[in-house]
Length: 322
Image (cartoon, rainbow, N blue to C red):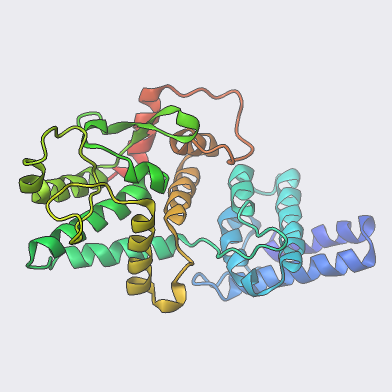
């Protein structure tokens, strides 16, 4: 059975249970979905591709397509597509991760609020751009320190799921280098464990090594911030960057790597979203919730329990596979 044949069966049922107007709107939504996938990089033709190829991850492409539509149209069309996925799953025609589907659907806009659609590719382009800059670091100490700090910050945001305020508040003493963890104070003043990838730790280590002469004259090392200011007003003092500074750093690299038109489309919170999405796609939504300390990830299994060691292993399987 092809994807289109399954759509035809789904719409036949919709016409029996919904008003003609609703059925027509559902049909239009699914045609937009089909057209979106036909024009995607994979050029997926619903009338030729087997139903077993159906993926929840395609919803992101649909959401991108619907950005120029009204919020009401977006929700109507995505509701039609969501119903189609659940119909296919109920018929047993293919195995679908409905939790991933719900996670994707949670990115729909709400009425009266037009948010930029998150793109994993955008974050990866930003990270690729800064890695390229690191191959030819500036000659001056201040510019080199700034580049190393920015790289460490962006990679840390992408690979840890830290909120920007939490990243700005990180101190050297918080890091457990051997266990690749940090103990932080998160939302509601709750203590939490955060995992770090090898590349995040390496980027931080490179930055701190370059900053070492400045750190040594500050006194206690463990209370020094991980991410420090390197502007003229700070001078040789090691002062933590503010959340506004971190936001400006992200904006700078968004514009430099993606162009001026991308300003505002990627924010520090987008990096957290990137982290959660990456975990959810490679493992499961429960793991994403545990690692990101995120209350809004829905449809998790209430019967699964993960120890801290199991979380370490699952995190490493995603972020330290190379």
